Image 1: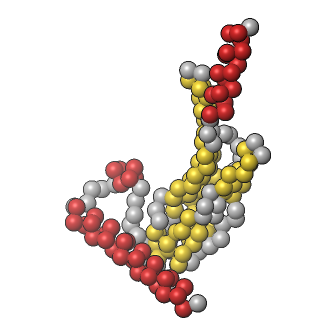
Image 2 (image 1 turned 90 degrees about the horizontal axis):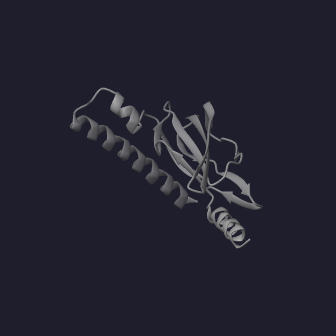
Image 3 (image 1 turned 135 degrees about the vertical axis):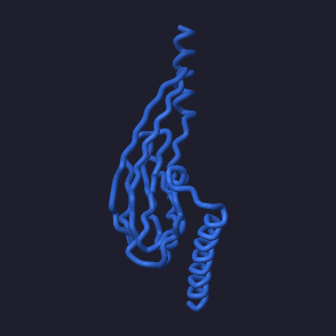
Length: 167
């Protein structure tokens, strides 16, 4: 009987210690008007359906791409659920990636919205995994493109800060 209670208490401790987290990530924080951005919502520690606020200023061109996994190793269980979307902006400026929420054991968990800067010109930002497959460019060309994207992002940020001060 003692061993039975010990085993049950160990499993309860493992289940209680499992933390649930919800996060959102984007493939780039600055994109061009005709570029696309990949948005991924990831729920760790549970496998529940996410509630995502509607897209404003963004058009969904692909998704949701859903991934779900469950593993049980050495008595420890791990659950993960994610949804990815490919979005294209409708206009220039700052667009907010909406938050997602989920209720776990009666407790709501929510992400914060993320700022996405949209500029008129393409930003040439590539995902690292895609960049390895593309044609290699000289280091000076790559740094010029990166500098231009950073410069455009800072200009937009400065413009928006000036507009906010006027109000």
